[in-house]
Length: 276
Length: 285
Image 1 (cartoon, rainbow over the protein chains, first blue to last red):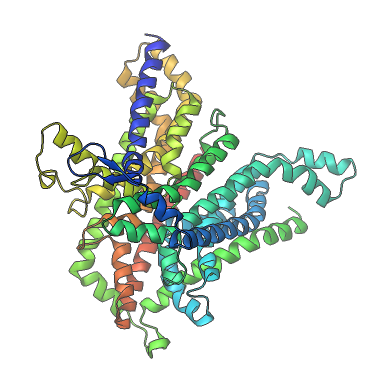
Image 2: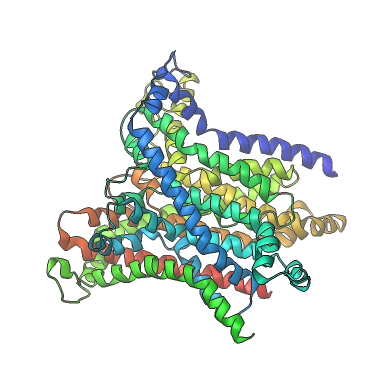
């Protein structure tokens, strides 16, 4: 008995799990560069740059859609950190009456689909001239992102005791100086992770953008969705790879900050699963 | 707590409460009003429960509800069992490696997962090609139809791929805590593998597993994209049904679409309440 067989089994297990995780990416990579790939060939018989050309086509739709997606997701990330940071400070740093209710209210859009509320608010958006605009899309994307930034940052602030801030104040720093030079650098990694996840959630939105953007605001998932409903696996796969790129980048960055070896390594990650 | 503290808390919470209060709760309130038939935009100002009577009495809604419960239930159940098994067998592996492997599907957009899995399980996909190479099938149509099918296999597979790692990370976090030491004690005292799982590990991981499963169930109950892309045309899951009613040219169908939305919101909110209740009880215990 002892530890060694367990360890070996764990390593075999991780290979199996890694293979299953990688499996859907295999056809995506192969199809992106495939020219001719008939059934039942296991590999494409010809390769072609058609998928890459489609992505890089100057003035093409991919370029415009990527720009829209980047712009909206970037703005959503900034805004939801700006809104979530103070909320996280309140929820993580203080105990107060009705806190449970406030947490419930803030978390609600994670479990109650924002699709329901967005259909409800659509008429009002039309009346206010927000429908069919990128700004309107930006606004509804805040619904699924703000709960995440608030909750991630609440857990960041909950881990801080406030002792460093008190020390700074004792040494004569103003409240703002203590926040600017002590609190902010301390929570910066958490803020970065919250912002990246907000970016990713916005980047992955399809139906909220379709409803409020009304086809006027075209983002990458919309191109991917219409390609996937069609019959061209080359274009679909090429788009999927572009669409997935920021997620992989975010993962790399997040893993640097979240330190999975920590005993509570899973804590900050719980709830991040719904990033689309 | 001083008055100054209270003001500070209110001010700090105000932006988030405003965003969610207006854009989310406001939207749900508008959905509720429209579900009652109040649509001045098309000259309807009478309020009634007609849409709810129509929805709750219709065969379409019942079929859709059953399908939604089935998809959410099967996805959650399969994901939970696989996640616990995966976490148990991987808990002695390197934390960093398993974190990367499990984080990847969590971070990948559902749409990409659906497209990739469709290209694996479709009748001309990677799976069918492998089956042909092994001589199991000759023609694509001999491979079982796993997309747009009555059993929603493609949808469930996509959800399982996405959600197993999510639940597994929760279980791993619990296992890496106190469970390891307790299990060692139980082993020294002569407990069998099954006894160690049932009496030591299971009680430690159960609360986290239940909480994570609730999140997955609520999410798969209300999610739209995957069933819209990989689902059959009839019946559809509830959010897709609401969207189809909403897009109908006949504006008279609006109250029905909104009634379905309100019902989805009520069901998922109840799950959210159960989830937080559980979290609070755990915090106390």
